[in-house]
Length: 150
Image (cartoon, rainbow, N blue to C red; front, side, top):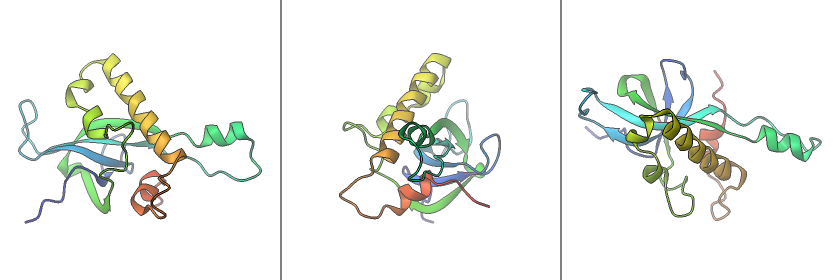
């Protein structure tokens, strides 16, 4: 059987506080690890997606509505639904990808979690507000930042 849960796969969370939110897999633990003896993944996702912007809005309002609120957490495979979209190198900033910034040990303390969230927020906001001009269509990134309608 092929491995579906890979780093860069866009997933939808199914349970808990962030049910229905989109996230991207940063690192997978197929066999579990000490403390968590089940298959799980470290994910970074969009808590609050950007809102609709129109031409008549002021610059300040556009800036406020274009912000992304992220989250980072470890999730059991049973609680995530993989989608067809992959965003492997899409979230790179200054030569560093999400994979190098997000680590499970940074989720241990409140201060490190806060700084980690701030870094992820800057990467997501930068990617959303300044899309990659070399690629005309980016369906995976567009899907990731849109609110899930159901």
